[in-house]
Image 1 (tube, rainbow over the protein chains, first blue to last red):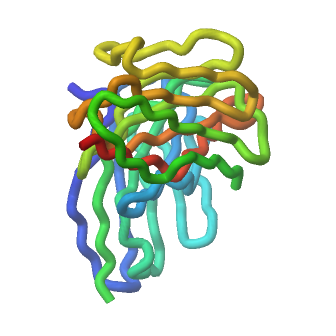
Image 2 (cartoon, helix red, strand yellow):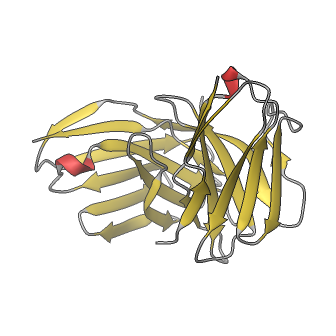
Length: 111
Length: 116
């Protein structure tokens, strides 16, 4: 079993749809959870980070962490064509610890 | 958000030459930086962890003598690909950790290396 699993997609949705991206993980010691967006031929961009369980909202983005289920989600409301990218989840044990990435989900938002 | 820069953004070199890639945290100090490699349509693969003032920690399977890492200051880490070969052609991305809790990792824009 891989340490972090993520559906690679591709996921295609119409403009304006709510997008749900998910990752599962096996190591219950992870404490920090991140979502990155990566456009083609660019470095990843940090979207959201959360510590432990709970929800965090920032504009059209909401991140959820359920440590009991070892499951994290990123919701994108009112999706736009500019949201078309690869979304990577990542998690870390703590300070200065390497981040473990999911393989990424390719999202296409169709106008 | 915090800014991490990489230079150069794109480099082409001949087989057998060495290439140096710089990673800088522009508006914060980073005691820890990471170097990743990414192949097309694949996720990031960690190569090494770079700590300021000490030797880098390499992941299994990464050749230390081929990928030289120097973290000379709190804002600069360099990756030197020595005696590059075509199979070293890839997208190299660095990242830097900001904050006392080390909870935020910011990525550079990446460097595309093509070895002819």
